[in-house]
Image 1 (cartoon, rainbow, N blue to C red):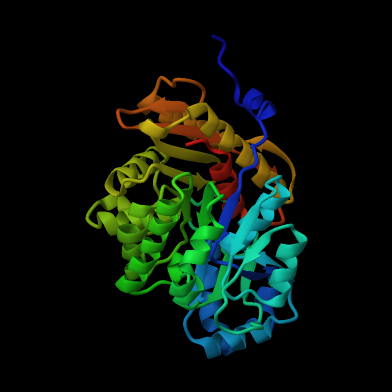
Image 2 (image 1 turned 45 degrees about the vertical axis):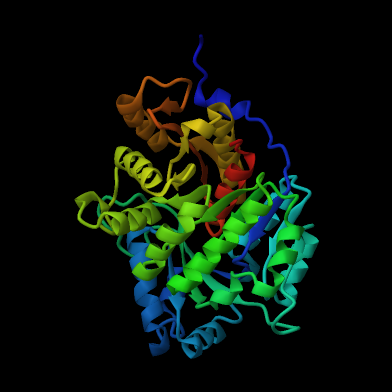
Length: 416
């Protein structure tokens, strides 16, 4: 049999079959601000009230790593947002909001977005995108739009750490959301369950805003109820780079056992693995894992939590780990390639090539897990591993939301 080349697989990628998709619960607007040398040296940017923002942004730029600062002090957050009120441009934000608009534009005619306090501009963007909105009957009748600040930056504006892959990235400043923003009100749970019975995919987010064991337990119970009322639905939870150990533990021990799938990047993988096994040296926070260590870590996380599916996205390649009893490997490979093309378009760059770094990483994986069953597909006793090098667009102008576009596209396109 003649082995397919990566270019051939990309050229022959099949479009997704549209399915009814539910997305929730993290929805807001993003104010996208492009970081320039002029911004960094401006008098406004060097105001004392922005000292924490500056140091955190510079840390993110030093490692070219996407990071988020959740500001618990509401007064401070309001001061920061007022300073940048006339900067940048507003776009749909939040993992669920970004996924909803993207999936609707990709041919999914039935996308239901669950958000409990959307503001007027948020509603308008979702409606114009053809997304159905389900909100709560409780709370304010006319809430304001929640706006996060997203600082997009190219590499090289500050000295970059040794060994870091140079890439465009972003630093997000967001307010602390109420846990109720991602929990279905108890008296509306029956109506919610009835409304979502026709949906076969649920892309859920926002669990970084939970704090207590009781809140995580309530969120887990609601996922279980969703699945009990609809045995066709598959639940995906999207990870974020939360560093609060309470949040990480709650996510691992309450949410992952009731979910079917998770999407995360290499930094988030380390955060979860460190929480599970803090004594293991390669799982130290901020540690850079090799491609082999990432795959082994993904397998470790799946084995310890019972997840059916894990989608790891990092610069240059994507890895999918899926349990053998529910794997359809060729469909999963097609889903990753489809998502890679979608992200390359969304990055608003020019051209694009199959990542040389991704091809090198693939060669490392092949040495350990090979020979492949088919291009990019390997199997262990318990799990199937699918790995593809990605398309890298040149001169990109957007990084915000790309992980959500990627994860939601691959999840909806996958068959499991």
